[in-house]
Length: 332
Ligand SMILES: Cc1cc2nc3c(=O)[nH]c(=O)nc-3n(C[C@H](O)[C@H](O)[C@H](O)COP(=O)(O)OP(=O)(O)OC[C@H]3O[C@@H](n4cnc5c(N)ncnc54)[C@H](O)[C@@H]3O)c2cc1C
Image 1: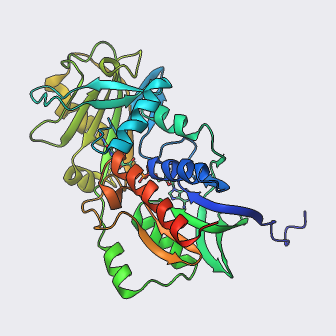
Image 2 (image 1 turned 30 degrees about the vertical axis):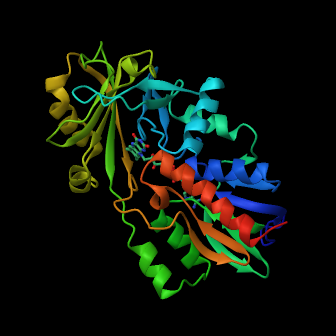
């Protein structure tokens, strides 16, 4: 192909969902059941976004969301479906020192299994980054990093809000002052996550997760006790304050500092460790609406955990709410 030619547009998409995290996958499955032709696009290699599972040296780690809780009956029903399909199970009913009796769910084997279950019936395009969203007549154009442009009658955008705002800005989408103020107020915590393969059982008590009351560590999980990893493997989540202070520092040194802080709870040595930085870990404040309607004609909706609660369940509820907004403004 002549390198000067623009790549062809992909057309006939009723709804383009940007992001294959919980919000995007719940939105896409719901819209598809409502009869829409849906395509999901994600820049990542895996599914699930912040509901992430990774393998290192034969060990498996949940290094983003650790568990899921269900307060809303619709989300509880989804977890039951995932359980019936072998993609989710109850981990425990609370953690050391605080067993409150409320079920904590996990994916089987890891958290991404829930995303993979939701993705089964969907058309999902991975490793494609959207760089701008632009209005084009009665459609939205999603411009990709590789130069391709996709056109859709409606778009649901589920990236963390600051990233979504960049896509709108690059595509010349102007927001009202009120909407801009509302969305730019949504800030996120950062989280440095250490994944460490151990040379023996961690020594953490069952069920393998707890939140220290002080120090640089917000959360410690034993992926082996949890049932995620065959090999002994722990995940450490640093506090927001520690993560901000060490974000640009050497990651090996950061891992060492956090593993030293975890040492009083560990009875095994570390074979190898890696650090992952979550720049947009959890929203610090949640918007008052279930999603943000940027345009209703043609529909462009922002959804995700910033709208219905800073958890996996909140992301799911916001994804469903965003589809209601599309169906209301664009009935077929
Ligand atoms: C360390 C950590 C621990 C957590 N612990 C818990 C917990 O125990 N329980 C709980 O309920 N929640 C927890 N959470 C929060 C939970 O993970 C999130 O609330 C939820 O997963 C958010 O889902 P989402 O779909 O809104 O966003 P995401 O999961 O972030 O999905 C957004 C998707 O959009 C994609 N994307 C972004 N920009 C683009 C682009 N330009 N082009 C294409 N694709 C793009 C991303 O790749 C991503 O897959 C935790 C989060 C972190 C980081």
